[in-house]
Length: 511
Ligand code: NAD
Picture 1 (cartoon, rainbow, N blue to C red):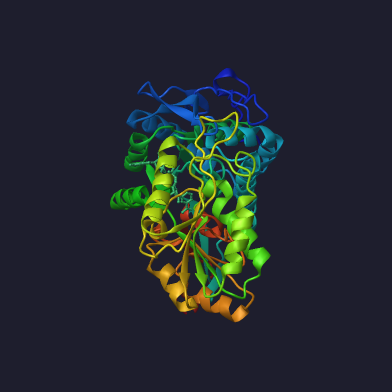
Picture 2: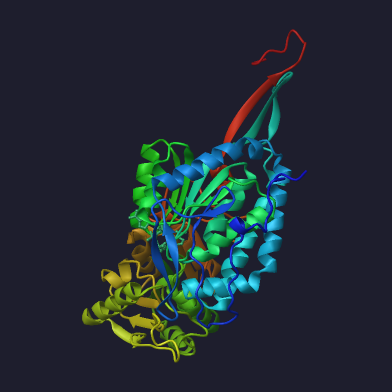
């Protein structure tokens, strides 16, 4: 069955432009309009904001700014399409996602360059972004094998079963740092679950997300089942307030996660809101030098430190100077512009450099200073080189707050318990890691670290599918996790059906 007999992928209104550049060169991109009802449409406000290529610090395009009327239009289109999608068997819904995977793989190179241009990350990092998104699609494609809900004869002749139903119209609000992966944490599970999904992309990186609507249409998704409403705060507020949107997934800073969670739940909606992070990496004297130094550097400076799972605070326990020296050596090898990209904006660069200056003024030792860095040919870009701060005290802002840039602060402690206490006292609890050769030390720490995702000799302990993603403390508001089967359950309602067909007189509901 073709679930979308009306869709003609190549008609002008649904044709999203190609990105013409295959390299780090500068190119402009067409304005990111909204994707509503299977068409690119102007926003009702008529306003746009500019989108920068961070490598050049130059405007590469514009994005529509939306308001209440745009979310209402998306809601109306979703409402119209939902009954047909909801009654489509889950296996057929999953087939659309199978085809989406193929389309992303077909255009992988182009998409990597596009994501690199809008976000500033390297081509290889953009590839990782998309590939992790594809892994989430693969998980959702397997849901028909897993989401049967279960059933049992609970009494003589009496059967109880669980069936998952979609929430209905749901929404996702996403940050700038992973333009493809974070939307794909949510969209595949939500769609296979039978929902209509409205995405509010980051206004800072709207162009990759813009492609998803056209790909899903090409994959056979009915118009109105996946839509994007671009914009900033006004668009978010309109999404959260919309009476027909029943569940909101949010990923971004803690400040906004808290606001969105508070408002959505006050309105009786389901909400799961992932926030910021300050990820601690504990290094003990028996850690393997090469493994530790390589992993810590990759974790702290990969994606220019703009990963919610980046290690931004290392707690060096006891005599670990040789490992600190190894980290310095590894970090010095990073070639800015090739191994590491630009940070997202001029404001981010100012913020990051201020943290470095303040830590230095407060007595931290700057082992490597990324301030004033530049890349030939891209002098206008937002560059901050890898920065290593040693002898940071746990109370300094550089040790407590999320910097979200390529800065690794090192706090020294005498004992493992002190190191664990530093992590435990921090407000965030997304990820934490320990590097050690001892299973006993690893287990001791893993049991005591107050983070939702713990790495043992792994610098970026992002759970691979099917394991779910989500932190603790101020890194997450709401119950459950956003990916894996818990993600599917977030976008689903579990209905319990109890059946008795038995004609036996002695078989009652409680017998
Ligand atoms: P952000 O909070 O500024 O923006 C996230 C989304 O919220 C965007 O779509 C934006 O348009 C919207 N928004 C911004 N201000 C708003 C406001 N006042 N009211 C309503 N909506 C608003 O985050 P960002 O700068 O795009 O992303 C970086 C942050 O995201 C970091 O803190 C990072 O740790 C976090 N993050 C967390 C995870 C996680 O899994 N925990 C993953 C990725 C990023």
